[in-house]
Length: 303
Image (cartoon, helix red, strand yellow):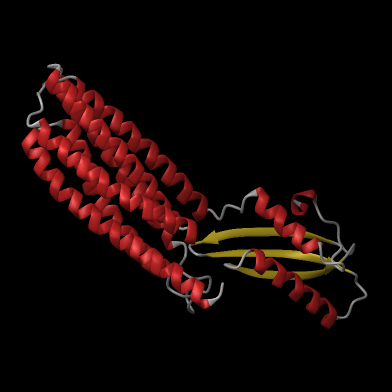
């Protein structure tokens, strides 16, 4: 990746995470007012979600800034793994909030309480949805430009927040207009389910990055196709790929005619590396040269 491209992606990541903190702070403030005025458990769930969003946003800001640090003597592969670690924290925070919301909803079934001041609550939920919607649109743009896992998770959770806000609006309308206090905790449990699903998706994605999951089959096939398209590359094996933040790593063995001298083999490897980096500009590519047919390669290393 050339330096201007990387700097622009870093700027977008920092801006996206900073805006997430600002929006979360504003939402916590206005939802606190709404909860005190309405007493709705669904509103409490939305407030709690925003509080945890704020905590997760601060963590994301710290982890993304850490992930953007360049490689140093201690971390020669860079600090990109800080991003999925932040994703795991975000997943745990969201999951814990969901279980708390379930417990509070069950308590409201046992001790029914009619929400009040529903008009104010609805207005605040609409304002919250508008703020989050604008943030999600910008976050999706940043994800398209950077591929950031943390920003992608935050955008996914932001979309869930909008669904939660709509659920709160429905709960306030139905509970107050149809004298159905039980409907409020029902919506609370549904919202908890949305939170749990989001926590699972974010945590699974983060774990895949931490466990160095391979690129998609399509990307691996593309790398293989690029490598063997060189007229002097007979085959490849032991292709390994992984991602860490904005960086990714590709390593493979190319098989060449054993009669080539070292300089010729080196030039071929450089050509293949350049071709792969054109297709994957963010990648660090490491290529080892092997004489074709000198050793038996298992099928596992061929795919």
